[in-house]
Amino acid sequence: MSLLQTENLSYIYGEGTPFRVTALDNVNIEIEKGELVAVIGHTGSGKSTLMQQFNGLLKPTSGKVLLDGEDIHSSKTKTLETRFRVGLCFQYPEYQLFENTVYDDIAFGPKNMGLSKAEVDKRVRTAAKYVGIPEHAFETHPFDLSGGEKRRVAIAGVISMEPEILILDEPTSGLDPRGREQILSLIKNYREQTGKTVIIVSHSMDDVAKIATKVIVMNNAKVEMRGTVDNVFEKSDRLCEIGLSVPQITEVFVKLHAMGYPVSEKIYTTEQGFAEIKKLLKGGEALA
Amino acid sequence: MLKDITIGQYFPLGSVIHKLDPRAKLFYTFTFIIMVFVSSNFISLALCIACAVLIIALSKVPVKTVIKGLRPILLIIVITSFLQIAYVKTGVTLIDFWKIHITSGGILQALFMTLRISLLIVMSTMLTYTTSPTSMTNGLDRTFAPLVKIGIDFNIVTMIMTIALRFIPTLIEEVDKILSAQKSRGANFESGNIFKRAKMLIPLFVPLLFSAVRRAYELAYAMTCRCYNGGKGKTTMNALKYKKCDYLVTLLTFAFIAGVVVLNIYCGEYNAEFTFNSAV
Image 1: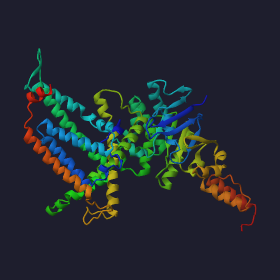
Image 2 (image 1 turned 30 degrees about the vertical axis):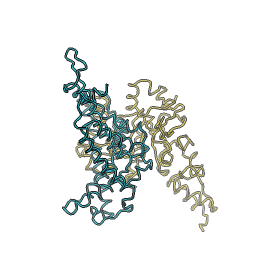
Image 3 (image 1 turned 90 degrees about the horizontal axis):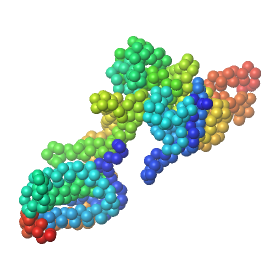
């Protein structure tokens, strides 16, 4: 049994009005424990709607969302419980900060769970460590932080609930390269250290190639492809057709291959590319 | 629930009324509102009703939509009617039972007030239904432009109005987003006593206020970059021009004023007993 599963999940916005839009159309996916799933798709493909289905913010028009094999909408308590078990961090989460101190903001979720003061404290400190917020920053006002720091505080606010599944909607959007790098490595570390499931929604194929163990491609409210990074990015033609792309480094290697250099087309990260080029140079091939 | 707000809604239907100059529409709407209060008997009020019906018919706005616009003031109408029936004691006694004492005067007075309030709301919603925010502010701008001579730059007022209207849907969307985000962190907006609920508004309003201020700054910078200086020497792309039909409508508005005044004088203050007896 999968940890999180959808069964013929469909969702329609504005049913019964002229503005009716099908956001999800018969979606069937399974997510296993410990995976780092990346969901990609162009704007309006239904990614964000799908994320809001996962933690029960939206109710399916038809079909089911199963967490540990149980329907998350079977009762009201079940739905509320799901919000804590599946932590959803929205796009631009820094806009949801509201407390006077960083500490209080991270503690908002655990407090809502009704945990003891000691437990809340423990969770805040653990979560802050994962996102790299030092303890001396706890009393700072969140609005005094930089954009990247605010984002990390907001992510800590979700991690502190210790959800079994952490969902991040576009966690790197609008950040500078250093901020991106920090967020990506914190996601990677968090998953490696806790062994928990992480789902990220992303527009950046480079980010996806770097950290994902499984990729789901959404197109026009449907699941278009699913598989490992290799499985998905080797279909670069189809990805381009539906308005997506492959990582930049992959494009370079596909072109090199087409030009006749003996390099692999299946290069998805800069590290792989570096190794491939090194191999090529050591092989003594003349570089025209 | 938030998406049901219809204040300032515009129905782009392209009717004769829609095509009128906004100044003509503003003029007849304000005249109408004053005349509804000037009307002192049912006959002059009937003239007002006739005009309202004519405008609704010409505008092609569905009657159902017009009536729906009255829903928010239903409570006010009910309370006013109740007070009129309870306190006006003129005319023929209709019901006299225990403490309940209803007279024809009370009923007629209640009916009169109901018609007045409904006409006010219907005509002001008709103005927004048939006039786009841009042309409305254009109209206001031009109407009050002469005020510059006495040091009041009305352009700033209309700019503030335009921006306020423009940002209503944006802020509603923002509220939806923040609500979802805080719900994901376990915030419970739906249950608990009134104090708990009031406290739950903090996680909603602090981010909302913050983002509204941020947006205001961004907009101010963007406007400064495009050399906005408060309408001094500003020209418009679609300059308003009074056409034949606009003059006709303005003329008709004056005729309407005359009509109400004449009917007021000739038919006098409405007499509850008389109206009631002649109705029976």
